[in-house]
Length: 311
Image: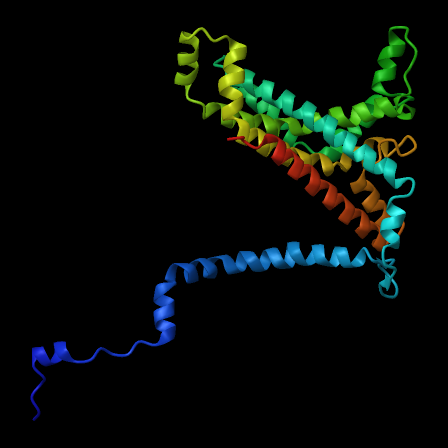
């Protein structure tokens, strides 16, 4: 029977060779774990985000009705068509809604959040009431607005006639219909901005206001010197998400104005829908989606640059 090797012999024995793969795995263990966790998310993102965008860009250079045959290469024809009437008017309408609605919605949401940040009785109820429109069905509320402003038998005209005034035909007034679309979208979406601003305001330490008050600062001075600088990141976030939201106006235009009168309230998202599913022109619709994506990217970058903290 052979004797077992002594302890010094075991200590002096050469270590077992470690493979290159084992050393690499041990050195980058955390990176491997991270990639293992992120792989399902990345696959989902590639399949449902990146791939559809690439297909859309490819279709924008073709002519296809989406039913028969296959896409036919037409080069830049769809983009040339998109800068001919009525599409410039539609792009102008979209930018008009984005600029006016975004500025108005951000200011309104900010000052509502300032009021809701005060300690008043029933504060939880007021906060809930402002957020409820965000949870309502856009289709149902749009139908209610349509009934309210209907030129014949509408609620508004019935009220005007009951007090001896002439009825208003708002559906043929482009300015009035634009105002209706903006106010309706603002009413439905202001709750999200209020919630974000309120979260930012509650993160500002009260001692900062107390110190400013001891130095004789007024309410406007506190707002300008403390509140707005500290909320700059939140303001940038609200503006960027608001830009995306206003570019995506669809239900209000489809159900209230239907793009009229004379395309004065038509927007890009509705026109993309019409081109694809009403006119059966998927190539032109894809070109519109690409143009809209580039416009959205440009507006978002401009917003981020405008609100960036200067050091």
